[in-house]
Length: 403
Image: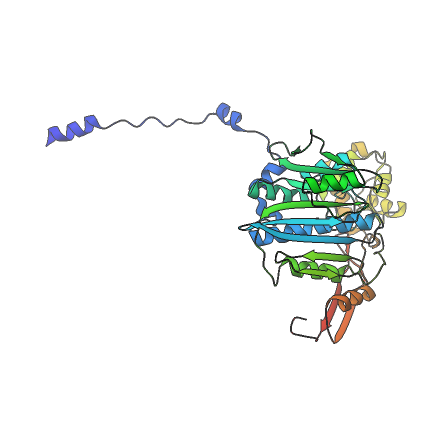
């Protein structure tokens, strides 16, 4: 009926008007985010997108750090990797090396702060460069198990070891120390130190120097392709100067003995090559330089740029080689960039990379992989966009179905 319809219409509740955001309210909601906060929510970008890869990434980051530290200090590496299951889909990873150790004040920053490190600005070969790897693994461990990263490091037989339990404060990208009074615990050398380690259940194989990191994380262990086992085997082949001790979650022990005492040649740091620098970076370098003239800027900032090459670059760009760098604007920088691409510049030196070499590849294969035929080949160094690289390959054939 009409009356009934009106009754329903009159009785219908009015919807409240939708509250619209204003420029002021949106401004209040905006804030900075730290790099650790970003990666905590996007951990798949760092190789922690599933439990199997998380375990492999954690072991790889810790082993890579150990190899780099030992080689840079001129120490023949000896590395222990221990993985044990601590619960359903939970594993504890411990990696210890005989490297030079880490200074006490640096430990929280290295393991508890993303984008902290010494390798990012160096143009030379190293396994880890971004300052994200091991700290990201620790962050993943804290997120998935709530357990802090445990680090013990020692720089000398006569000095105390330093023990820290750390987690990252992702809001501020800074370390939070969970043991001691904000500066970890010093473990004295000798019998007192051994007693302290045993009493507190600290995992540490007695050594005069070195570092051990222990991370508990949500993970899945499996054998075969893409596994921790395969990665460690390949690491032993590619690094015949390393001794690896490995205990897997089943308690099985494997040992890869080094086949040489010879460390790889130490790579040298070089300046960037002009072909590898983009326009925006070139403009930024011009603003940051302390060199007064364009010619001196080119010679001091890049590899393979002599004064004669610098003059040719400036001439093609129709700029004076004596032009003041403070007066170079965006248009002049663009002309300079285009000129660099048109100028013949020698390839950069390749001593910033450290190839294994055919002899050592063969030694590694013989030591680790049973076979009937072995071959290795190293191509001459090449350059892509101003960055040197080198391709090496090794082959083992026969000797069983797993070869």
